[in-house]
Length: 192
Image 1 (cartoon, one colour):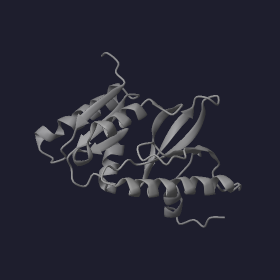
Image 2 (cartoon, one colour):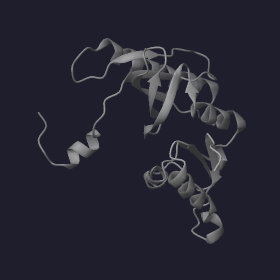
Image 3 (tube, helix red, strand yellow):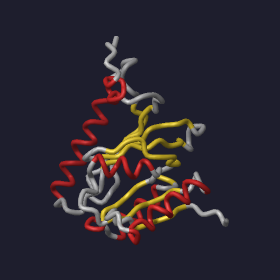
């Protein structure tokens, strides 16, 4: 019954009894320790698929990493991110795409306002030149959005601009609580 801050589990997802031990741990954490961050390490080949992401969301997993991509630098980033990220307190993951993940967070330097942080994924398979180009595209996206002022465009509060491949690249934006565009479109209602 002692409280803990973060739990790491291995989930094989082969559906045999031994591989379900990680799932049992996640269920136990969700039942008795709702504010504990859970990190999954899995050898499952389809770690990036929507089906697998939805499976992890069902257990309120904070983040996950495939064994093929596992290294101590990446794992430490995930654990650090579970608590603080450049002056922000991460609350939970909002969404994940091919290049980045968006987190809901508290801005500790601005009266704990709730913000969304979009973080570029670390990909150890990319060459330093590819990483630099990817970071430049990501930073350009933040700079473009920052210049646009409109009631229907989120406000960009801050972003990192770096040419160092090992640095984390992210931008901080207004957090809007509500359904996703995908959910709105699924209703079939005409949008104004």
